[in-house]
Length: 324
Image (cartoon, rainbow, N blue to C red):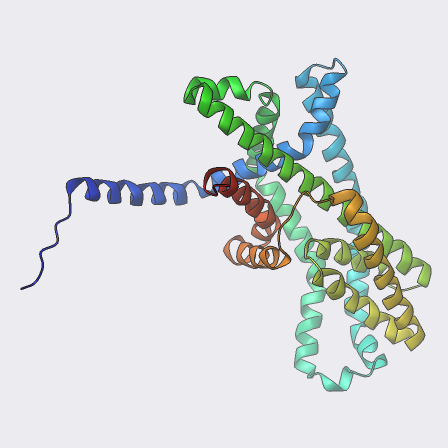
């Protein structure tokens, strides 16, 4: 005789509420992403704001000064890099067939593949401009993130009192300590990773320029961006530079490979211990999986925020789920 399965009203209500909650979270996913980006900005800028506030500067003015310094320098750097980047990328696309013939792989690749590659590279400057227009056309989203970050920075010191009014003193202390730990981990990783990317990119640019390698700027930018990928990132970024060096001479290719090896050793034994320390503590496999999943779900933005999301989840799991 078949066994009768009974489902209580409470189970049905819980399932409905759970499904509605999932739908609601999906419906406001853009707002949650903006809030997370704002939290990310807050963790980067809060030490600067706190230091300025310690010099008797009003916190509102400290936030404004931090915004002007960080985003002003960042905007000026981007504005200075983009024209040269577009010019060198276009030149590389135009000279690609000659470059491939020099290193002896021009005849090994189908002409159709070369044509598609040239088309993609040739359209890259236009894509850069298009991305710029998309960023400015989505000014509301950018402003929302900046406003969220502004108020998070402004109310950071009063957060414990605000949490206490909602959750009570005991829970507020626990949540506050967790937020402090998240801020510390996120801020350490973000400031360290940005510093490493800039230092590695600048070292590659100087080294490639001294060696006389063409397209030094896009190659250095590639090396800086791939710095986010542990272990394999610097190796992948070095391959195009070595191939371009090979088009000049085998000795130049060896020199470029030696430069990449030297920069990686300096990074592993000097830069990473000094800049990053042991503040991250995530397995390289986890980082690679996070980057792949983030890129698959949201694209480039997903890849950029994947490691911070893993850091937050790591802190939350240790604080609330793992019993030591």
